[in-house]
Length: 272
Ligand code: SF4
Ligand code: MG
Image (cartoon, rainbow, N blue to C red; front, side, top):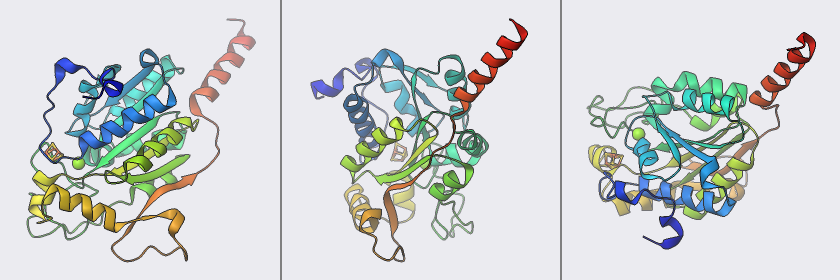
């Protein structure tokens, strides 16, 4: 392991449990590069995760970390921000974790504009539990619970976050690692709820059921199908492609700030 990243890992927890070719390690490296690039104090940075393959990341990292229950990472992270708003808090979730059982927490964390940086590892499937379809599995794609093709329509997570009130919304892939690092850094600088979706490969479940080839083929597909928003000329995303880059940014009051201000006012009034 490179010395510049080693300090951020609990070496005794390695080797990790991810399958060969899984994109999760690439996301983790970009996260570490972003934390290092931002110069964040390791003792003032917390990592919160839910349940699933992606959420195992919290256990490998040497920060104050919370590996919580399924779908509830944002609820725990909200508690952290209430008690210690000064902490840098990153929330790591899978697509199933964040958009199904955790969907309610997601929309309300976004609506309240809580100062959190959320990363969604989107591999389009529940990897850890055996390859069930998630709300991010595209229509007609296969999963163990959609053996003849998924009949659901999938969420557009970026539009969902934007519509719910997030003030920073961005997407990258595990092929575009420099962009991913940059977006995580920008997301962290935003004082409010920031969501970065990372398109990543699960060759073991999603890739295998949908005959997407080897891990390298899945990475190649990310390269070929991603369109950087900066290169979009007429505003129309070509059929079968998806946008990457900073997709939305807005200004809005941050929730914990408002709460603390209200509490201070009440204390002044009540003399307590
Ligand atoms: Fe990665 Fe999929 Fe294996 Fe989970 S099941 S570790 S997401 S490749
Ligand atoms: Mg998943």
